[in-house]
Length: 250
Image (tube, rainbow, N blue to C red; front, top):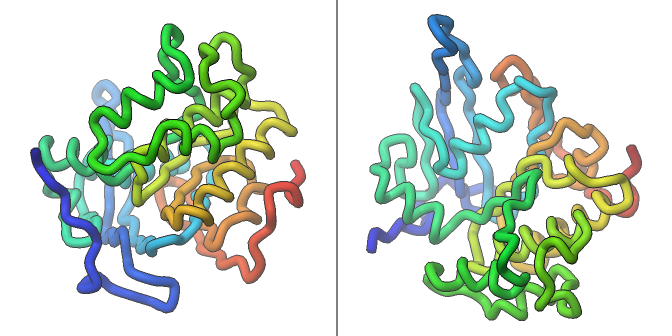
């Protein structure tokens, strides 16, 4: 089995902790027919262990492309990206697979649960391939769904299904939690409940968390907000006070 090295103390450090991601000059271009489309343009970025980062931008700003590259789902056309000592931008398919399996948890806008499996069984699929997973029932308890653990996805609300998706992402104890519009398919109150779960798990497990959204209100719960537009980082904002999800309104 290919093993991906953990970020080490040799990585750049700051008062906030060890540098987990370090990106320099990340550029991503696609061909749409005969037209070349640039999704990312010379992005420089460091993300530190335990940090809660919100990537904020409109549709087409490049935030999903950046998240996919951070998660090892896509490769930059140019530039360098490191996860600790691992050069992700030069990694093999086997290294990227090991990186995703061992270190990254994904939460997407749509839940992607297997409908024929119960909550527990959806999580068990992940623990079967994870190196050091937490007990399935512990992950379910973290998202407040113990009474629903033997239910099928069709028996759950949208918010409950998203919480199952979060439990599935964190049951393998990932170092990184990447969330792509996690409240995009939910109503206001349910969305806030899901954000509360993400914030609490990030704090309790010390997971480095990156959330992408077009909803500016969510920026208040981050340590740092990175605004993207036209494939570039437009500005970076540090929050002196992180708001609780219950304090947010939109």
